[in-house]
Length: 214
Ligand SMILES: [Fe+2]
Image 1 (cartoon, rainbow, N blue to C red):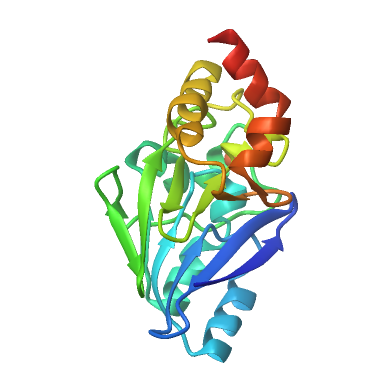
Image 2: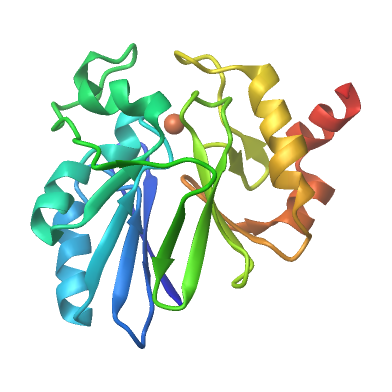
């Protein structure tokens, strides 16, 4: 399993291209503004067949060019139902994007029973409401890695002051779901540096605060 980062858009959002070298199957997790042509070009260079494009949540910086990449690759767009309204009307958000973006059609709605298969690797869905009601983490148990979107960052957690955000929910998602996994899980967030659960358990002050309040 190979992972490439595409950090782009006005607020430096990370889209991830994930692929299996043997089967040449791939998946894209979030598609920032200005990134679709670059990601598509890379998939062509590598000879990949993109099976899934997944939105970790519906905020415009994560789905800015998702529809365009879906058109280019023919891949299925997946998300949680809770954030579909944002993806359908990304320009109508409280904090609107700096330029108009294309609404996204979700082809398949995920839940915690969904499995996304890329070559030999299975990704399961962990529903982690709090940053938004339809926020998810994608977890590959065998590979020990997790895409955390805007739920958990290196040294921080997602904001909860946007529509459908909830401090109570994000606290529960992090303490009961994410932090129930082992130290060796690699954390790949939607902004900033990557981390591990060991490091976040030890150093993330927001995570400490969440556990102190329980
Ligand atoms: Fe977000």
